Image (cartoon, rainbow, N blue to C red; front, side, top):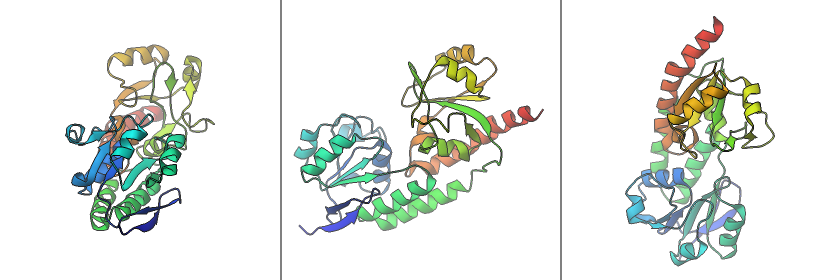
Length: 274
């Protein structure tokens, strides 16, 4: 089989066919992107968290979770490309796959620019640069919909409960928050995903609290719980995919964030000025 050497977003070299035919995705947002590149017939394996498109869960082999994927299932599928992510997948397990001679392509997305780079690189690796460029144009058009304000509202973005967890400045979520006018009150925390006590939450004095739908499924019943901690803060239930999924999802995400900016952030900023 003809192979070519490509580099992933970490700078590691791997060998893949010019047009990989047996692709495994270990990243939910990248599964969606691969589908949107027109690669449905070439995707053979996904994780149990790869929920878009929904029918993949019935037509593709589930290799486990993003953290606890099963190397033996992956090996049996004989992939010629495995798509992974530095943050979402465990380093040791990815190294194990690499040591087995499997072609693991690792993405590293921290912000909009690195997300765009990832889309370009992965499109080339899969042999679908034209499809990638078309999606990139759509992303850039959607980005123009979002009117990023110069001032931001102090915001606590919660991704987990028991214990409460948030994000710092080194995350893609933080970047998307900033784009729609949210000032991350834990941006400077030394931990990428800080665990918070109730006292730390109170002391942060956020004007807005965002309860994300993932990875923890916050819903309406949790708003009262947060309101008791922060009675003077506005509370917003957010679609977590719009803040944390990169790739073609950004086309939809930027329109969603513009609605958040206009309907949630702008009124709060006006009230702060009074």
